[in-house]
Image (cartoon, rainbow, N blue to C red):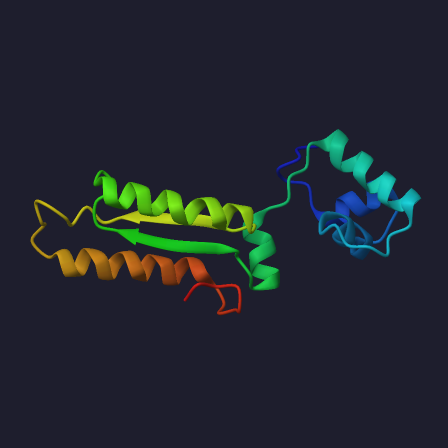
Length: 135
């Protein structure tokens, strides 16, 4: 069975547990009997299953993602800025979604529109508004 197409329901069936038990194991929550946790973990390990961040975000409304929009990533200022944002974000369990509008220097005909489009794409990625969103 393809681990990329494996569902939480199928994992539960393979491990002989409920889907809520699989969910608690995936989310590293307590209140799972050690034998059940071991059975689920065995299925996860054998299948190579990796939870989908997109699916998790749709259910929880938390993406744990920061959007960063810069005008020229080749500019050392922005490179340093992004690295200073990324390190603590990663340590806190967040990802960075980086948009390089390339509007610095040789400015396109409508730099404002390029930047508006970048923010519109961030809005599309957000899904639902939540306390874990940056906007």
